[in-house]
Image (cartoon, rainbow, N blue to C red; front, top):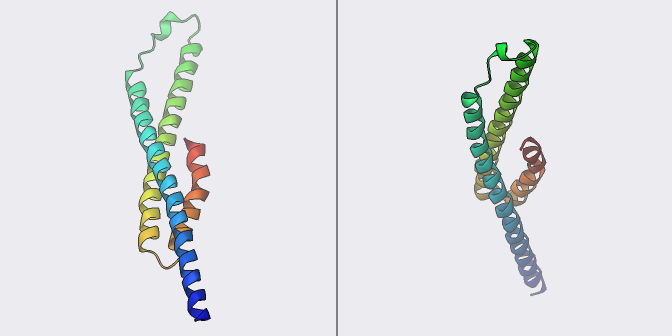
Length: 129
């Protein structure tokens, strides 16, 4: 009887821990989807800024080098922002799909592993965002 009670207590404790990790997993998953959506919108804005930029002609400046440097800096910034946003979109998509797959279809304890993995990758995603 005592062994059965101990086994039932361990099973209940494991279920409660898994339910808690599931809530944490859902929080990280929803955060990644929100950040990914915002990064996709910003990537579209970057493309628009890249296409619609109409600088004045070089002859309107007192020195020819000034507009060239400004254009170069502008295009480097826009291209870097676009690349960072696309990286965030791809990272959040991969983490959401593979993390959910591991959590649902993985071996025993995979919910904990998936949640901890999402937590570790969160810093890198937010850094690029």
